[in-house]
Length: 452
Image 1: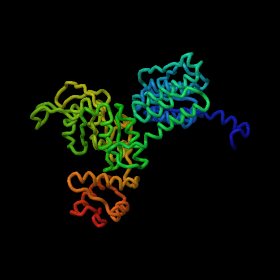
Image 2: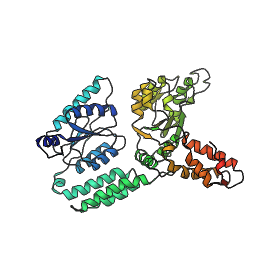
Image 3: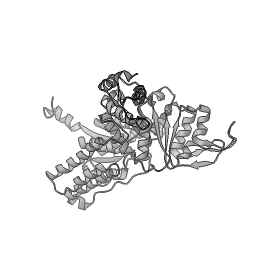
Image 4: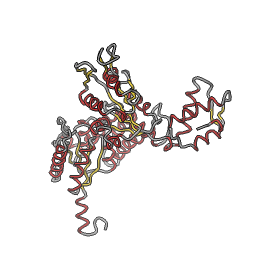
């Protein structure tokens, strides 16, 4: 039966209330969702501020529960913009506070009750809740803003532009055009169109080293641009050969730490007995063979970025120490009790799902949550076959730095498109290098020279 057809349908429509949970803490969102669903709320979830903006623009909500920290946007600015853009929406922070500028609807008590219950549930399982943070002030709407709705909307648009400006110049350009709108009615459509244009144009700008125009690669470039200016930890997930280190370098180069060191450590390439000393450093005589003191990889990355490749292979005994470093920014060299403070952004990569490693009790759940503040999934090459030939041209160009550049014949290009590429981009690079050698002095690679 459709809405409006009968008393029962009207009642169901009245109960169709939507709340948006904006928090990077998946476990807490699950607890709060259970509480709110039982109270007949429709619940939508966002892991960060950018995702929350997109959800609210696509479909509004009667209420939002906002974390005290977001991985991609500054909470104070974000909350202020949300209040201006959605003045009738209930806005509560996870610490239970609410701004004084918004309406206080009867449903606020339900939200507070569910919030307290979820917090008690999290305490009950002995975890450290992500919501236990210092309160964040939310800007109030002045009386002048309420009396001048056109100016308030223009100010809101400018605030949106300010949030996005630091992420990408394209965001800034489109939102500034929208922020210039000062009239109501049809003119407000221009503001919405400008904001939509800002969101849609960013994915069309692939990063210089991110070769490919597939939707997966464009979305990857968008995510990298979003998270790069932050200090949030990033978990890069993808099959072997998809280019996880390339993504990590792109995040570093687009960050404010680009001029500082980028240090790489493959957790699977170093014996377990030496991995701790390699990470944290050691003093002379700390263990057999330690003939002199040595600075660890973490300390070497001070001010810059540390990339931990194959993080899933890190021994459990060392995971607790890495977790403590991530939470405190402190480390102790092996054989020395002195505490050293460092400023390092950590990026991690894995070619196997860490959640599966957690289920197998081979990886700590708390460390997984600490690393996966902003997860990025790399698409497999077989899922973006339209990128194979552009990638091949790019790789042949790089091979041409040492020898004459070769091109693919039609038969060779067709053979590349017939393969499923289990080894992803790395396999493609090796196949092309082999083909280049087999082609000898000829400038064109034949089909028979494409060997898997």
